[in-house]
Amino acid sequence: MKKLIDEITLQNRISEMACEIDSYYLSQDFYRNTQEPVIIIGVLTGSIFFMADLVRKLSIKTKLDFIRTSVYPGKSTKPKKPKIIWTPNTPLNDANILIVDDILDTGITFKLAKEQLNIDYPSHIKTATLLRKKGKSNSNINCDFVGFDIEDKFVVGYGLDYDGKYRELPYVAIWG
Ligand code: IMP
Ligand code: MG
Picture (cartoon, rainbow, N blue to C red):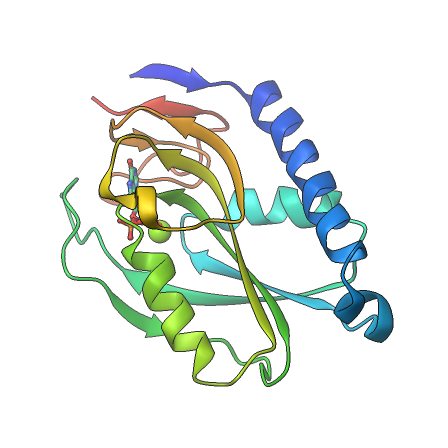
């Protein structure tokens, strides 16, 4: 496996992203006037390390919850039809939500997650991803906060898996 993004580069960029996210919310009347926590919703399981590092670098108030999708079942690097299989417990009506995922590939996961969360009539939904694959049909999928644009290769580590493995690597590597 070839290392693509090392630990220090990851942490430096996540610190920058936390500043970008803080600046956005601190400039919004809906956050300034209410001081209501932003509900950070991580897409399980891949987002766990990114989410954990990101939220500890944020200054804004947050609450944390999760949504689970199933996209790459078993030994596959090709997306299958995704499903939402776990939804958050936090009340989302009128909430400001930030969905956090490890990687934006086709964009179907963010689309599905947004559709699911919109059922509860939140006030705003924003999205953040650590990685985004370049040159994919995701170019028309808007993501508000992006860590790194990477080439269209299957990657593992820092939460990302192949068949459930390699999530614990502290860096991102090209699989194979
Ligand atoms: P999308 O729905 O096609 O945007 O894919 C997003 C989801 O697919 C991510 O949350 C990951 O779980 C998974 N995924 C996409 N690309 C990769 C990869 O290169 N390695 C590991 N998981 C990936
Ligand atoms: Mg995922």
